[in-house]
Each structure stands twice: as C-alpha cells, then as structure tokens.
Image (cartoon, rainbow, N blue to C red):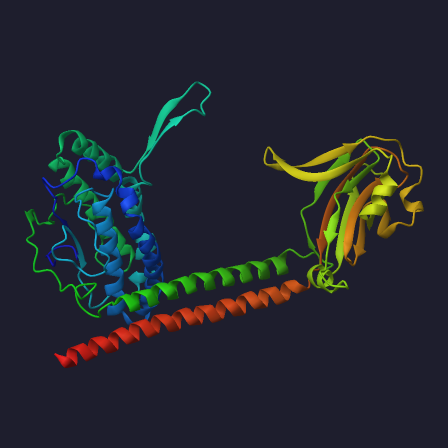
Length: 480
C-alpha cells in the first residue's frame, strides 16, 4: 500500500458493527499460536538484521530478500497487535503469513531503499533513535498491569501500570463491552500511536535513513501534508515485502532454524569467553581460582565444614583430579592467635570433634547485602587432644598470619576444620578456598570451538535459504 510521505506505511480499517462485545476478553488465549510463531520469527529478524547491518556498512544496500523477510515479520506482528491488545480493531483472525493480505483490515508496507548511508547505519539504531525510544517506552509501555497491592504498611491500594496505547485500548474495550461500539476518536488516536511506534521500529531496523517524524498521524489511513493519503494497489500477496524474493514456508523455517543455531552459538561463545576471562583474571599468584574471603567466627572450639563428597565414579581418583586439580584452603587469624587448618575424612573429623563444642558451617545467608555465615552449633567440652597432635589430617597448616594448605583430592567424604592451635575457644578467621581446575582450559577451548562451528552453521543455513529463494525467483521470472 504505497503512499507518499514517510516510507513506512501503516493503515487499518475499523470493523465497525462487526466487533464482538466479549471476544476481546479471550483474544490473549486465541493469539497464543501467533505469539509462539512470532517469537521464532523475531529471532530470525534479529539474525538477518545483523547480516543486513554489515551489508549496508560495506555496500550501502539492504539485501532485498532480507528486507522482505523483516518487513514481513513486522507486518505479521502488526496484524496480531491489531487483532489483540494493540488496537482490538478487528475480530478477524490474523493469517499466518509474511505476505501482504489485501483484504485483511490491517496493512504495513515499507518502501524499499535503493541506497542507505554506510556511516549512518553505525549510529541511527542506538544513538539517533534515543529520543524516539523514550517516547515509544511511554506509548507502548510494558502492557497493562492492574493489581491490589497489599505490600504497603498503611493498607491495601490499587496500583496500575501501562503504556498509553494499552490504556486507550482497554478503555475502548470496556466501551465495546457496554455499548457495542468502538469509539472512533479512540481508534484514530490508537492508530496514530501505533503508526509512530512502527515507524521507529523500521528506522531502528535499518530499513530507512529518513528520521521518523515527531508527528501524530491519527486515523486508519495515513495523513500526508494535511490530507489523507489514498492507498495504492496492495503489493502482490506472494511477496513478503511488496516485491522481491518469495518467502516460502521452507525458507522461513530455514531462517528461524539458523537464528536458533545462532543463539545457541552465542551462548557457547559467551560462556567460553566468560570462563576464559575468569581463568585469566581470577587466579591468584599461585594459580588457584579462589572464592571470596569470608570471615568465620564462633565462641566454640572449632569451625568445621559440612562433609564434601567427592565421587569419581571410577576405581581411581582421575575424575576429581582432572576437575579440581590441586585444592587450596587459605585462612588468616583475625585476633593474632596461632591458627590451625586441616583436611580430614569426614568420619575422622567427626570422631575427633565428638564431644567437643564446635560450629558446623551449613550455609551463607544474605543480610543487608552481605553474605553472613550460618552455623549449626554442637555443644560439648574443650578438645582433649590438640589438633596438631593427631594424625587424622591428610593436609594441614599451623601458624600465625595467613596459612595455606594444599591438597590433592581423592574419592570420599571430606571435611575442613579451623581451630586455634592451642585448642582454645573463640575461633575467628578469614577463610577462602580454591582449586587449580586444570580442566577449565579444555572447557574454554571446547565452548569456543563449538560456538564457532555453530556460528558458521547458522551463516550457511541463512545463505542456503537466501540463495535458494533467489534461484527460485529467477526461475519464476524466466518462466513468465
């Protein structure tokens, strides 16, 4: 529906006299199939927009096949919004197609740009569009929200939150419910607001270099230079964007599949990059990945960890060794006392602490934004044997200042115990634990390689879809 004026054309016809009083109450349910399909289509829209970005940057042209697909996604979304709570302007169920449907009451077309600025593409979708984004946030909002708020100390109260479009549509819906009529003035305003939003969406989608006007063109048909534009003949239904390549269901599915693979690839690459950064930046000078230091304090004679179960799943210790490497426990006293830290099997540690008053660290709880240790206290007496005088420890360290023990883990249940070296009460220490985690390098490489392969696969799938569509379009042209 080409018209003069701004290159994004949004038109709609109100189904006067054909709107159900009550159907709008369940349209959210009826539209669920469209919401599911559109979720996948918008993933494809994002991927193809990235490709279009680089195409415009290097060639100054928006690939026509990609343009047609992206316009089709916007058109489909507009029809669903017009049917549902973006306008409630029709009860006719939206068609499942990217193409223009001439007899449907809602239409969206975008004039294809023969050339786009290669420099402008770098800034228009984020920097230049910021003023419009602020307005669109007010117009579209986050959807209507109405609730009975009981969280306030002074009693319950009604609260609501909505974009202007959502609020106006709800008002129109109640008018429709009680009078059977959709107020024409509200319809004209809702269409103008939606037209503003869709123009900004097309501009941010790189489909035009013409800056969206700060103008509210109300009514079902666009207003151009103070007059109502008369729509021209709609584009043939076979074309998703008003011309160019035909987007068959198979090619659309191919693009959606490529987009999903692209997202998975992004997840692998992001995960690999994050782990690589952590591997390089979080290791200490000794090569350990350490946890944050936490202050542990108790009035009893010892602090013990809960049993740490290491199960290799084999007859040896290959799995824990490959996963953890060497484990380090660091502790420094906060009161100047000589400190003891040791690792023992959970059973030996339990036997040593049997009858001894001690605290078992079971959790950390956030209090005022800080992690606070949670202990399970066990009553008893002072230890009869000093920690350094028993041979149950597989690794231990004793002294003043910062102490560190290194331990190569084996299969079994283990416990870490922190005590004053002289066996006295009032144990307080700053403790952290870490491991060399040699397997992390392999994980990083695996994630990055897998992500790279999936990224290439997504690009190949997109190119196949685009190339197949171009070939078929050329064949159709030769046969005519």
